[in-house]
Image 1 (cartoon, one colour):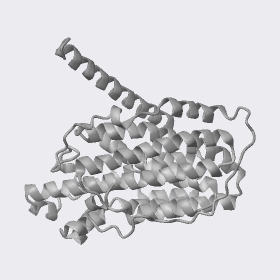
Image 2 (cartoon, rainbow, N blue to C red; image 1 turned 120 degrees about the horizontal axis):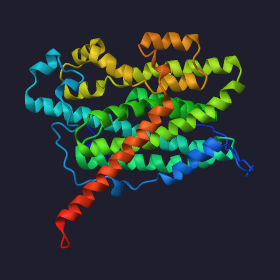
Image 3 (spheres, helix red, strand yellow; image 1 turned 135 degrees about the vertical axis):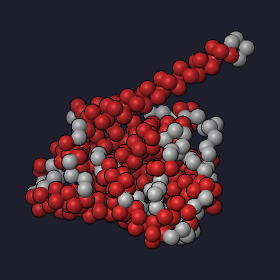
Image 4 (cartoon, helix red, strand yellow; image 1 turned 30 degrees about the vertical axis):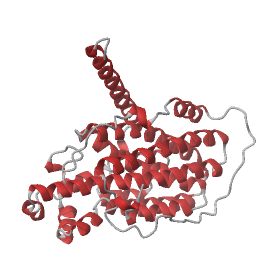
Length: 360
C-alpha cells in the first residue's frame, strides 16, 4: 500500500525489531495432541480466497463508511460534535473509520510476523503445524484490510504508538510463550471484540462481511493460544507466572489508551484535548472500551494468569466480570455467523441467476 494515502507522515516504512529468538526443531513425528491437531485440520479446511468470498464491487459512502448512527461516534454529545456541520461530521467519520481499519491492518501484520515466529520457536510439532495455517490466515487479513483501505476508504493512518509499543515487546521477546501471550491472547483478543462490534453494528455490507470472516479465523487463533498456554503455565514457577501477569497488566493499560484515537483529533485539528477529555469521561466510551476486553479477561483466567494483582488491575480498569464468559460458546457463535453469512451470499447469487433466466 502506497504511503501516499496516509493521513499523517510515515516516518519509516520499515521497522526493524531484533528478537534474538531460538529456532527449535522437533524430530517427534508421531501423533500429537488431539485438540491442537483438530485445530490444524480446521485451519486447513477453512482457508478462503478474499478475492472471491468478498464482494469488492460494493461502493462505500465515505461520509459514513460503517453505516452506523451518529450516536456511536466517540465524541457524539460533545460541544465539539455539536458545532460541526454535516460535511465536517462526514470527514470525522471517514477519518475514524480509516484510523480504526489502519490499526487492524498494522495489528494483522504484527500477527503475521508473530505466527511465523511461532513456527520456528515453539518446541512441539503439532503447534508448528497449526501456526503454519495461521501464517496464511494473517497474510490474507493483511491483504483484505490493505485493500479495503486502499480501494474503499482511500485513506490510512500510521501505527498507533500503544500498539507499536506492545508489538515491539512481543516480537523482541525470545520466549515462545510470550509471543503466544502477547499476540494470540492480548492483541488478537482485543481485535476480536473490536471486529465483533463492526460485524454486529455496521450496515455497510463489505466492512461487515470482511470482519465476520476475519473473526472466524481469529477465534481459532485465540483458541490455539489458550490450548498451548493452559498446558504450559502450570509448569512455570510462581515468579515466572507473576512476571507474565505484570506484562499483561501493563499491556492492557496501554491498549485502553489505544482507542482514544488522539492521532485523528490532532490531525483534524478540532479541539483535540477537549475531544480526548470528553471521551475519557463519557459513559458510552467507557462501556465501549470495557467491552473490548471481553475476550481477553476470560482467556487469561482460563490459562491460569488471574492472580490477585491481575484481578485488582482489571477491577480498576472496569473490566472485571468478563472472566465468567463462555469462550467456547463465543467461538461457536463466530463460526455460525460466518457460516450463515456465506449461506445468505450463496442464496442471493442463486436467486440472481434464477431471476436472470437461461440468458443471464
